[in-house]
Amino acid sequence: MHNVNGGVTTLSPLINPVLLVPFGSHVLLESRTDFTGFFQRNPQPDGPFKGQVFKNVEYAQLDWLADTHLTVVVGRYLLPFGIYNERLQPIWIKNLQDAPITTAIGTRTSGSGDGYMLRGVVVQRPSYSIQYTAYVSAHSNIEQLQSARAAGGDTSIFLPKKRLEIGTSYQRFLESRNINSVAAYVSWQPPKVPIDLKAEFDTSYNGRGYWLETAYNFTQLPVPRFVQRTQVVGRMQQFFPLNGGGNSLPRIDTQRFDFGLNYYFRDDIRFISSYGRTFSSQRNANIWNVGFTYRFQFPLWPGRKK
Image (cartoon, rainbow, N blue to C red; front, side):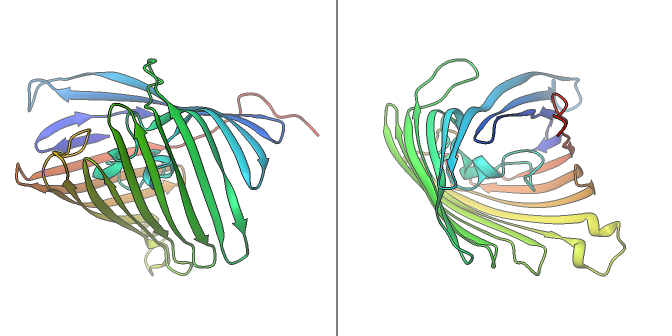
């Protein structure tokens, strides 16, 4: 991805390999690793690109599917706080490549936890279902497996006929300072209109804020078929620091607006672009992103013949 933030140009190639290994019908080993390159012109603005590649194990977990009401997870997992970190973070899923400002709330220190997690569906009916997640994470300074001591959970109700989900998350951060973090979120995809609407409010010791994002696909417009592969995205967000902010959060009131234009050549190949503008008392800045995402999959070994 090519990024220009306040006149500073960077290149950020990213590879996200995912591994899935089933053991029978009830046990699954899954893992995702992040290889991110960060290359910046040095000197600015016309010097050669220099930088390095960072790697991180986002999750490496063993899942035991006890039944529809309970899945036991052991290992390294993504912290299920809010709707972004666990569900929208992969580059081939998110509509805008920059994460919301409040993503740092409830995901310290690495966005992952090392420990165990319980999750499942409390009740499922044709008109609604209620899901839950509860987890405990231990402190770890092991390279690529960093995590903080924390405990928390998430719950939401989903209305399948309306394709509407409303949920909330809670976390107790148990490191040097015990901190409570809370999130409330909503996700709505109307059945008759190709709109994807998501919103979230987050609050913690270091600040509070919200983001609202909507995406529209041209699939129902009376335009040529190749134009119907276009998607437009908009996001607005605000953050208000508390107790000085910090911990990967702004220290001053910040507003940001983003507009994105994406094009799907196929379901697995996508052109992405966006323009954003950040407003704060410190400075106003333009942010440009342009890039491609490519998603592919293949079996590690041939399947058995039945």
